[in-house]
Length: 275
Image (cartoon, rainbow, N blue to C red; front, side, top):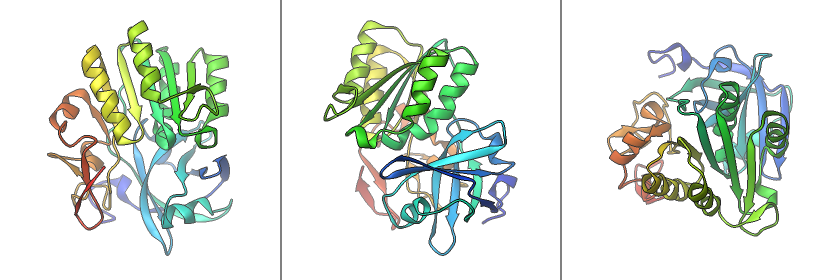
């Protein structure tokens, strides 16, 4: 499977160049890979931890020096191993895979929840470069679960990006849900497009808001993935496979999978489980 059709699918061994602590559970790992540095915002890689597992992770940054990053939360065996890596350790990468975000319109609203901000960071950089007026909402349960605070504050200060932080317990920024703040903004301002990534229940609510306000939407979805090249079918949502038909779905595709969105998915045994 490693050589399946595309050059991107070849496993490459890379060295961890930097480890940044984003919050007590989340770290950003940087490495240098010639193929990953060409990734589009929203694409993902399969990261292999020797002796443990291989998991999909969105690329959070690519930089002019050729380095790329993934941002990972410690929530399971593989992610625990990844967040325990140090500079100089080796991992395997395949990818980037899937479809990314497309830049459309002149005014964009970004809605990210938790580590769902990871694929959105590359997009924000692209929007700034293409002079798109950009507003960002990052939501989390509490201040300890926010990520990319420094990068977003820098984008606000130096690039004119409007940034709002919102936490459920009010420990940082506004108190409430990201979708509450988004709803308020949508009643006051007109946006051409919404981009979102995060918990699927949140994405479902954003989808309903986009329909209500007749705004274009692009959403990055998460499903259980094993092959990443459309063979195993583990990541199916309706008639689509998230690994090759997504992970970014536009409004037309989201309408086609509406009854599955925020409802259920398949686990590693192929069993249907609630989202």
